[in-house]
Image 1 (cartoon, rainbow, N blue to C red):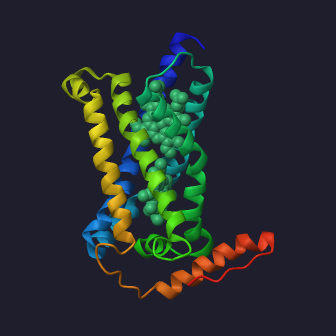
Image 2 (image 1 turned 45 degrees about the vertical axis):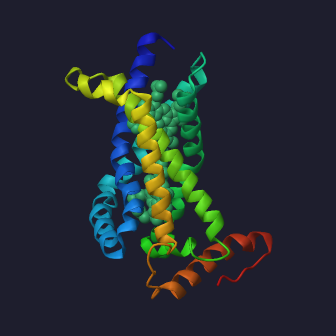
Length: 237
Ligand code: HEM
Ligand code: HEM
């Protein structure tokens, strides 16, 4: 790859990452807002999801931009030489982890609306974090997903701003380059994310479970549609 090609790819990757950050920030904030209780959560979710579930927004923002970003990322990863520092190494591992999980997460969550007509909101995450059989696995899965997303995004935003190096942003660039600022932001955001998951699990306030039976039947049906392939069947509480 020539030097000008590499620079172009880095710039496109920076821009696509920054665009996707708009969605990811809104989405992760939603999980943190679970701490503020159901009423605030529902209002926030209704407001933001009205924007990003619109097909003209969802298809470019959720499918096209991240796919483009991932393809360029894999291309860069294959052609790159040299030994990165620890922060960059962890940033890249988080990127590869997200590549593996991203479409599974999107199709699983949005697929429930598309195939089962059931919108995903507070109660859906809350059920997976309350059911005795599912809660530990889902807690680890959500926490790792949030941690990887936050780590890659925070380091990514810092790198993207340096790559694009807009002269008017010079004072901000100096601050967001500092490891201390990056690591503190990651730590605060990840802790808030984990506390948000505990809120979904009913640790900070009682969940009003009008929809529990509905969620139970729904997850039982989904899980059994997979388990059916290996001749098994389970009953959820
Ligand atoms: C689903 C979400 C995402 C996935 C799967 C993903 C994946 C990747 C991968 C695989 C790489 C290549 C790593 C390497 O160079 O070896 C990468 C690089 C990069 N990502 Fe992401 N990314 C995501 C979100 C973001 C976000 C939200 C940002 C925020 C700006 C971002 C910014 C960047 C930047 C700037 C690079 C290039 C860094 C460099 O050239 O050194 N990414 N990403
Ligand atoms: C705390 C961890 C997380 C939880 C509990 C979670 C949960 C959910 C839920 C319930 C939905 C469906 C509702 C909606 O559309 O907003 C969803 C959708 C989605 N999530 Fe996550 N998520 C987490 C982290 C992440 C991360 C780290 C990423 C990206 C790197 C991500 C990307 C997405 C995308 C792209 C959608 C589909 C949105 C759409 O098509 O409109 N999520 N997630």
